[in-house]
Length: 226
Image 1 (cartoon, rainbow, N blue to C red):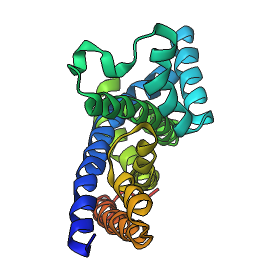
Image 2: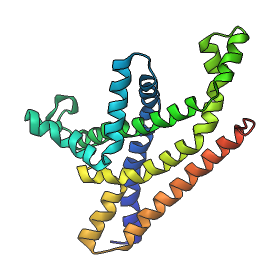
Image 3: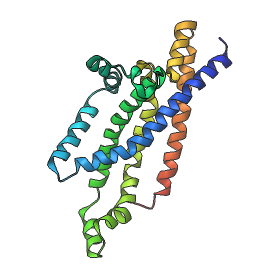
Image 4: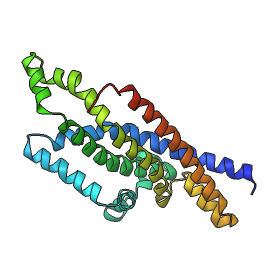
């Protein structure tokens, strides 16, 4: 197998890797905000439920969560996700969306704690000043607090996003044909080790682009000083 053939296979896998990354980020960011508000809620059952889910998800390996989401329904209900009617017999789609669900749940819990830390880091005096000026709680949050929170959480969000790129390689454990799956398959069938390092180069370049984008965003918000 030549260099071009291997490159094409890895690019095919990178398409799945990117889709899993993009959908996870798109869905987990808003879901994390919901978990955050639930964790800060004054309604005690909702607060404890949200914090319990976050604690369990953050306290267990993502790999275990992938296995539970993809394989546990088949064990408990005798109905593997690959046979669910929603997937219309498409086994690869079933595994992909099972992995996506696990990734979204995992990262939304991490993002929720980042949000909570950012919101709670804003001094109470800023809320009080807004109230003195006659602003509603909604106006205070969106016009005074939100941009400061975004500035403060941007760095940890960037770290989690970079980690997400690398974590997508775990999806191969539940038969998702992402980039590392193909690299490992080439290693097994062709006895070639270098495609693994070649795949690592894809991750490195992609994370460099993400880091650059977040650095640009941080500079845009540099007028907020903690």
